[in-house]
Amino acid sequence: MDREEFKKLVRHREPMLLVDKAEKLGDIVVAEYKVTGEEPFLQGHFPDNPIVPGVILCEMMAQPAILLSYEMLKGRIPLFAGMTNVRFKKTVRPGDTVVTKSRMIAKKENYVVVEAKATVDGKVCCSATQSFILVEEKFE
Image (cartoon, rainbow, N blue to C red):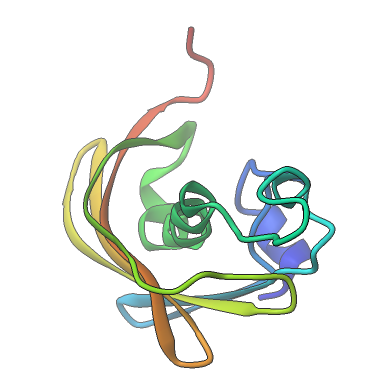
């Protein structure tokens, strides 16, 4: 699915929508995001040497992972509950296309755990085990 189709399934919007296309292939979700260099998070990180912040790489892995638990989301939104085993292996810069792969490793009624990996040109730039809690859409 392309970016517009993905937007029909998730609440994220620009400038925080970090998926250009995504596809669920069995128990894995594969997605892509092309770093254009125009993203707001690059303006100050770093002005003369732009590098995608690690937390943004984690978000790039998390957003398409939503497709793994989509049937559980009715009236709920996923929020980060934690991340473990986070590793940053390679910097990501403007012009790079980040490919993410996610696989669910555990789920309960309102809790999901995902293994995720992000690569650029086939080289791992980030990996993590991410957990999400699914909360009512209207929360305080």
